[in-house]
Image (cartoon, rainbow, N blue to C red; front, side):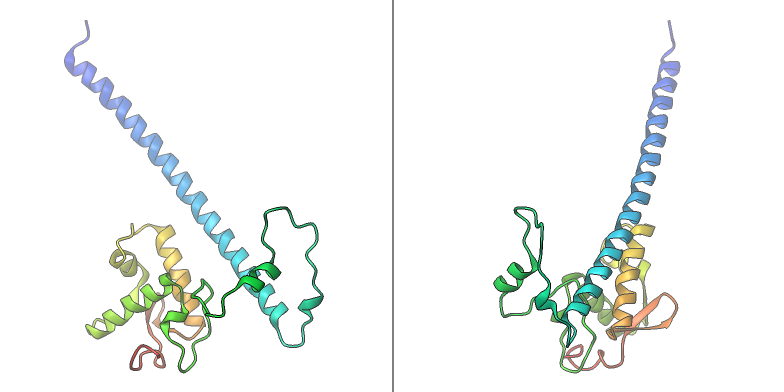
Length: 182
């Protein structure tokens, strides 16, 4: 007859093996998620570039005809025909210009600007992506931090943020005016 301690050790060993297996599975899923996010980002950039080329002055996008569109798929012409006249915030980040408010950005980007603005008002200096993740209540894991870094770098390249030191972000001088650039 096995001892109680022996049975407990067997159950503990089985539980430890299960935890190790789940951690390995979580690591694989996390890596797969990071790859999927990179792929999604690449496709988003590609779509933005194609949209910019097609909407460039002098381009003849009117001659582009959608062919073999599967049933139930909404075409770009249908989207444009049904698009409201009010501009909505999108995931695309417009270049900052005088008079453009933060409401032109999607909620995620507005949240980043607000966190940095709060930090500046408190006199705490530039913000890192790890600190952003913590402030937003996210797990500070590479996938989340890199997602924030990607967004912050995009805001830098479009003139909304400045990066005075690598990995540290603050509002650009032009944006940090009264009303956050409005």
